[in-house]
Length: 243
Image (cartoon, rainbow, N blue to C red; front, top):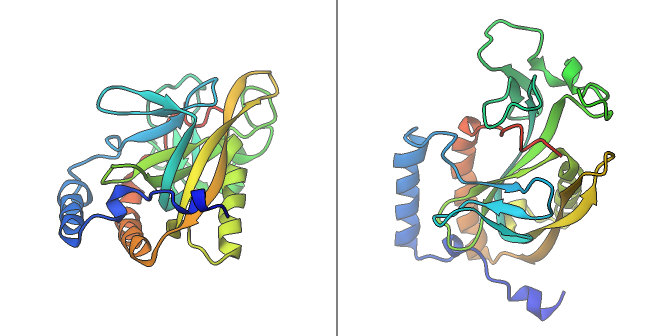
């Protein structure tokens, strides 16, 4: 590993003094864990439609970058199903926050969709409405990502075309005995095309360095905070599962 990579700076939140870290945890408990902040309020980093660029929300407006660096403090597999492919920025008709059990939105008692994802017809290959051989209920991966000067993780939504690569990367970390919250990583976007010739960005994850013991101890605190909150975070929108 090159000396240049070893010197990559970890997110600011992992190196702040203990009193500032305690203040962040208190703010989390008051503003987020208590329910004051809703699932739709968390900053979300998405792949820009038709381009190999990340779309990042900021105070000055959205910005685009080809690569993001930081620490994954929580990771989960999810599923998203929309009856209409043009649903827009609305909750899905059915979703799963663990990729195992689906929950139908606004249709209590409806057993047509929902329940065991593996047995659901919408999760079968060739069930997609576009006829491309994919799944109508898309597999997505959400990473709670701590980066830069942010004091709280942002949600990075990986579309179906990037899920396999993300899983393979996490397995590689596991073979080295490194928990995902113990590594500083870069997530780049590579140019690709789907079967219809439409361009999109496919995520490629790279290991930069292990966190120091102090940095990882702070990352574990964020991991535990996100575990408390993740169940209330929305699985995404139709745009998140577009590619």
